[in-house]
Image (cartoon, rainbow, N blue to C red; front, top):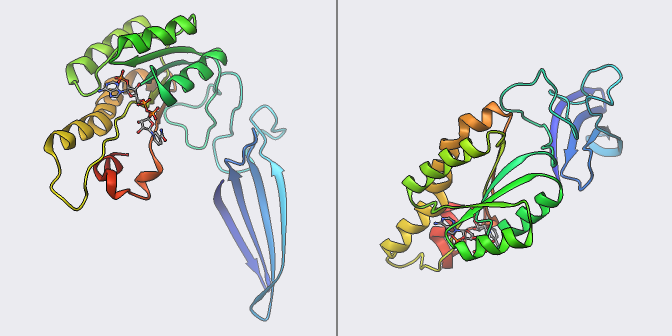
Amino acid sequence: MRYENQLIVAEGDYVIAHGRFSGNGRPAAWVAADVIRFEDGLLAEHWDVLQDEATQAESVSGLPMFGRPLPFVSGRPPRNIHGTQIGAIMNLTGNTIFITGGGSGIGRALAEALHKRRNKVIISGRRKGHLDAVVKANPGIEAIELDIADPASIKATAKKLIEEHPDLNVLINNAGIMELDQAAGVIDDKLLVSTVTTNLLGPLRLTSALVDQLKSRHGVILYNTSVLAFVPLALTAVYSATT
Ligand SMILES: NC(=O)c1ccc[n+]([C@@H]2O[C@H](COP(=O)([O-])OP(=O)(O)OC[C@H]3O[C@@H](n4cnc5c(N)ncnc54)[C@H](OP(=O)(O)O)[C@@H]3O)[C@@H](O)[C@H]2O)c1
């Protein structure tokens, strides 16, 4: 759950905070007014007024309940919105989505779920057998062989994607490797280079190669990271640093 505050007003012993709770597991965020009363410097009362955030179609006045722009939940993005949208909700249907590491694990699960939601899904990875298995089990999913540690492979993949899928509007950077190391000892250089190249440089290079295409389609870029970015694990310190 995420809380964003927009405005706080205070008068006498009363304070009102206007904010938004998102990530609440529901389609709409809550727009909230927290009304607080103090007595002798201590919290005496706290009331919440919660309302589902209206989408552009639902807003009678056309004005947003919280910040700008208005969220859109279904259909195409409003015409007057260009470039990067902050606070908008990604449309989960009708996209053309490229997923790295889509031949196994989380990437495969994401690919299949998004395919079922009527998106065009293209997966990638190094192991052709894994890619073929996903394509066979999910007619309509396509696959491209990609080694994200290799800049030439990234360049070729981006070119092919843009040529063959001009509607491409979503990139999901999911491919990654996690190897055990020893934070208190000498780090194996091969492990260091391959982890940083695969998990950090690769997604940045791929994003850079596709960013103009994605911007031209009001695109979305997602990175699959890890809780280890916030709570690093000594047993896998290099990996933690790349998430
Ligand atoms: N599992 C977890 O608990 C967890 C938690 C937090 C974050 N994550 C992150 O989630 C992502 C997916 O993890 P997973 O658990 O689903 O593991 P996984 O099944 O091992 O998936 C990793 C995928 O990345 C691909 N990949 C690895 N190196 C690549 C390269 N050089 N070029 C192209 N593709 C490459 C692999 O395909 P090929 O080997 O065929 O290339 C594989 O399909 C990773 O980035 C991981 O760090 C996982």
